[in-house]
Amino acid sequence: MLSWPLRLLRDDAQVRHVLQSAFRWVLVDEVQDLAPIQLALVQLLAASHGNLTVAGDPLQTVYQWLGADRPFFLD
Image (tube, rainbow, N blue to C red; front, side, top):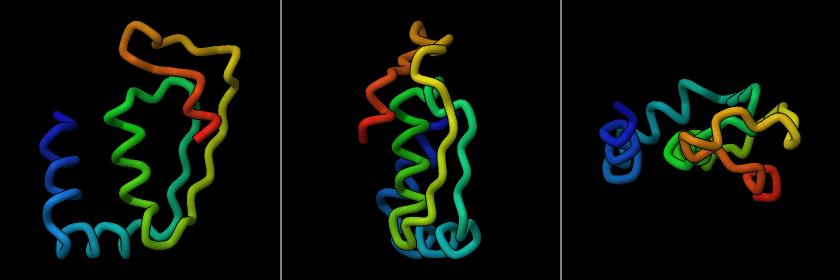
């Protein structure tokens, strides 16, 4: 469900521009539970404007079995 939107954002500049314009501020709660594909989507949405705010606790990663990783806090 996430691979197609990620591919679309990466490969189609027009779609990427429309979505980046629509989401001028990207807010992510529980960032410690993002899987790598979710992180890539968030980064692409915020790439043009840099308006990315995240909240979370690196000591409370619950979804490691889905690929969530505390080092995302360091990116």
